[in-house]
Amino acid sequence: MRTDLYIDGQWCKPIKGGTFAVINPASEEIIHHAPAGTAEDIDAAVTAARRAFDEGPWPRLSGGERARYLRAIADGIRTRQAELAQLEVIDNGKPLPEADWDVADAAGCFDFYAGLAEGLDANGAEPIALADARFASRAVKEPIGVAGAIIPWNYPLLMASWKVAPALAAGCTMVLKPSELTALEVGAIADDVGLPAGVLNIVTGFGMDAGQPLIDHKDVDKLAFTGSVPTGSRVIAAAARDIKKVSLELGGKSPFLIFDDSDVEKAVEWILFGIFWNQGQVCSATSRVLVQDGIYDRLLRRLVEETRKIKIGDGLATGTLLGPLVSKRQYDQVLSAIDEARSAGATIAAGGQRAPGFNKGYYIEPTIIINAPLDSDAWREEIFGPVVCVRSFSTEAEAVALANDSRFGLAAAVMSADDERTERVAAALRAGIVWINCSQPTFTEAPWGGYKQSGIGRELGRWGLENYLETKQITRMTGKDPWGWYIK
Ligand code: NAD
Image (cartoon, rainbow, N blue to C red):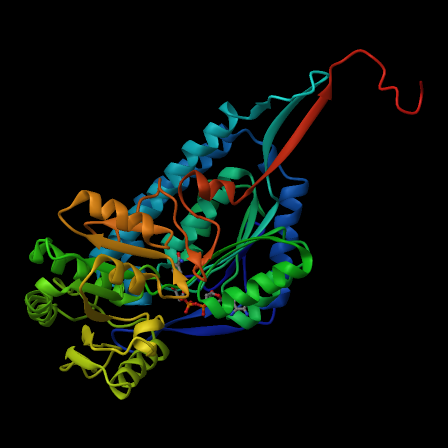
């Protein structure tokens, strides 16, 4: 495990020498002391990224040349897949097969953006048809400059790759402020493949100590943030001061609408996957499930049965499907959200407490809440834990209205045997991602991001690359006649 920050192609101690304890959420043991960067380290990192952008080779390489580095990083991640997945588990708590999936996806993300970097060469200049025949115009894409990226703890390696891969593909340089350890390994892999110094800099540390100086730094051109709505507000406020480009991936309270004609077993499986994967610490988790009257009782009975069977345990133990929550803070917040739901008059149909049989670790039972009042926090606010609210509806219009009655709009899911209905509902849902007959599968090629307070902009796919590109118009006067305005 790394004890140093990665700045300007060097591993270095934080200037003020700070560290923070990394705790394994399964055992509550301190497993490491990670470097805690501060404003001084951020300044050194931004200075390096600025120099690498203004004077270094990176933005001037062809897309194809940058693609070679990205593919080498992808290979480097795959070579260390087993080790990185283990590290993710002891740092974050998630079950090993999930971590393994994340690491493979992270490698795939670098490969995907290598392909788009190559595409930048081929599609370099887009001719613009002008009404005025005396001019020829074209639009070209160029990297925005120095990107400051901040990511949360729930998918440390994957969230890093969603930002680092497109930024590097575009020709930007970057300072990354991650929340957990594995992101530093991306720096190690980038270093191994010979990425030029200063192109990628990684400074771990606390939000106020390292994140805030990054978003405030005058030499950063673009902020890319994933995290909670309150922090997202601070990011956009900081961006507003200097008119930095900004993209935000924030929280959600995503609905899952299940109609009477659905296969109940499939519906139960997708509900479980939609809320208990990664202990429910998923921005797009379908945490509000709406079930049509005709199958509500049967579905709820089956959901409770299957929820109670979920194997809870250390993420490294074979067969674990639900690990501990990431931290004591998250554990306390989720338990208090469940208590508040009870106080608001909701009924706990399954779970609802610390998982029995564990002396140590931040384990919470997978929890189903029914009858949560529509104005309660349980129904309206992101809990970010293994907690799902289930309620019934009778008509399609009622279901859509309930689903859209939220300040969030990240994702939504709908299940029905009637394709016309699912298409109609998908069109009516105010969310950036709509899953039909499933919940959560995520694809590097497809756009990811939220409506309403769930964010601004899109990651992944070609939209993710656009986040790091400027568009330049280049216009040439081709007509031979004098302009003739001042000089006749
Ligand atoms: P958070 O907002 O507390 O922290 C996110 C990051 O911001 C961390 O690295 C943190 O250190 C940093 N930070 C904190 N204060 C800061 C400040 N003042 N200035 C700059 N940086 C600061 O969120 P979290 O608890 O780490 O993550 C959970 C949240 O992330 C949830 O709301 C979840 O929905 C959201 N999320 C969204 C997506 C998405 O794609 N939309 C993906 C994953 C997580």
